[in-house]
Image (tube, rainbow, N blue to C red; front, side):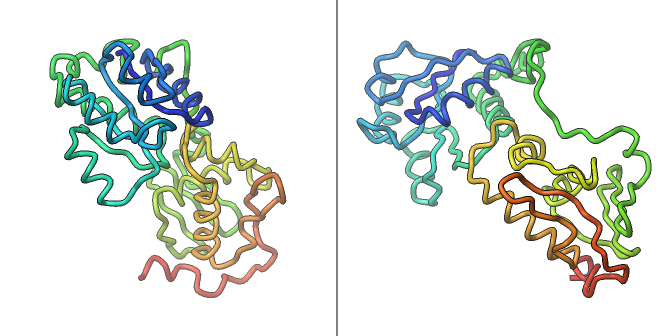
Length: 260
């Protein structure tokens, strides 16, 4: 599928185009609204609203006047009024940054199924948008298979990847999906330091577009739910590591999250 990416920020456009190429898309890029309107019509448009020469909403309006090409807006404008306006002007979908390439691909496929059913039906063909080509494998966060069948014990902490359950001193700890993924990733090699970029690549997406503060928020939540911040140690200017606290007694309040 031919995709026109209308994005002026190289920090976003480069990795995004690379990520989409892994899923079999051919990406052409326009850095301005005028360049986008002068480009040959693609099969899909990814439109950023913050362009240097004109508002992306005006680009959407101009494209829609002359074509039914599917348009997905990708922008930092996440307010409801922006989403409503974009959709009313003719966009087929609207994604607020941050987002990952896998979510974007899923949105592209969904829009394609709605607008071009026959094209969507062939999405599982080799080299299509259904998945990356065999020559460009995507990084995944698949755990060590030896740790899948039984719960992994890290001191009094037990992580069961098969059931996605966590117990501390025998008490269940309720974690959000990404909190579990983060804990499970750090537990693959307890004590080893994982860089911030490694964690974001594996737990979120190799092409995650968003502030790394997202990682800090999840680390803070994990520390709170585990009842002792010493469980996840910050290695300054590098990243984090999973560490069994020295205290042998159950941390005060551990397991309360499961009952709230």
